[in-house]
Image (cartoon, rainbow, N blue to C red; front, side, top):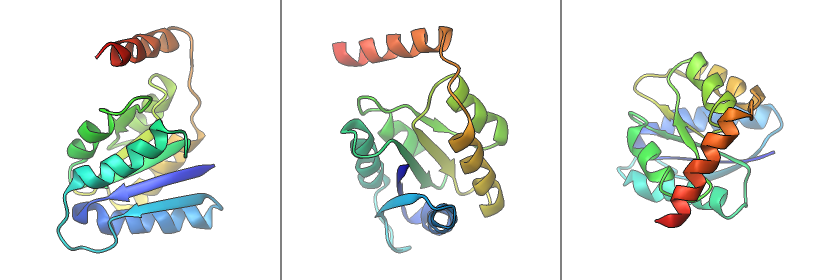
Length: 147
């Protein structure tokens, strides 16, 4: 599975840790930046990951910023993107099981590297339950197209 990953300066260190972790697991990682701790604008990196998902270039994406909120807002503006901010293990499981989130968003201020590894593993390993949850996601997609 190919995973696009991006962060702003506030999420840089955690993004680098996650990239290394995913590569050790044998994942194909597309690191879209940022590539230093120099101050940058988070929308640029949220856009890069979200566009890859929207265009079908990658199946999944991970975004990291200080709170996770900004990246969530940016990513969810793109068609076919369902980004979920996850700060604990239950959120990581539910964002896949009920919302079929294809982008995991993490706030570096609230999640340490060990917890980030757990969140990534849960998010990657959890299955979408479908059924009534698919019906709800379909409604979101319909509303996206009407805008």
